[in-house]
Image 1 (tube, one colour):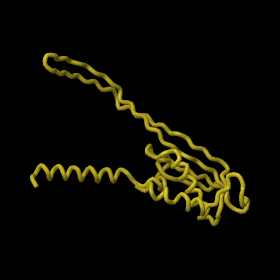
Image 2 (cartoon, one colour):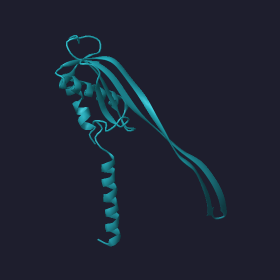
Image 3 (cartoon, one colour):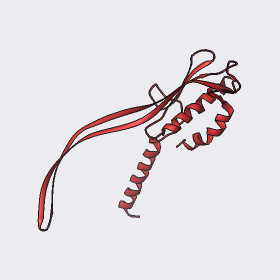
Image 4 (cartoon, helix red, strand yellow):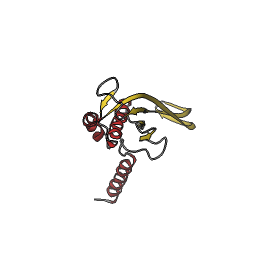
Length: 168
């Protein structure tokens, strides 16, 4: 193997390692407010706020499912086998980045023609991600069945394959 091939393979390996580091599990605790992942707050002994924020590669439905999955986790960890949604809100969060204007000058030719050109563009990039916030109730006040009442064990069972598949 010649030196050029070794360098090319080494560069490709480094790029693959960097890509692997950049992507991580989707379903994880958020490191800090505004970060991607789940967060939950106990509001009272039976009321909780559960949220899940996806990155710009996570579909809205996935964000909503992961919030429900986390709500089931919270209910089960507090000894409840069901929970009731008292509030649900999914919001798009759009972030716009302006990399500033760019200008370019070019020329070209092809027999018998030639020409020059000047270009200008603004480099504005927008990314949209989704965040779902749930308010849930657990405990003896939650009816066996009814509107917005979920079986936590079934939610975990039904959504666990989706959560496992998203752990990139």
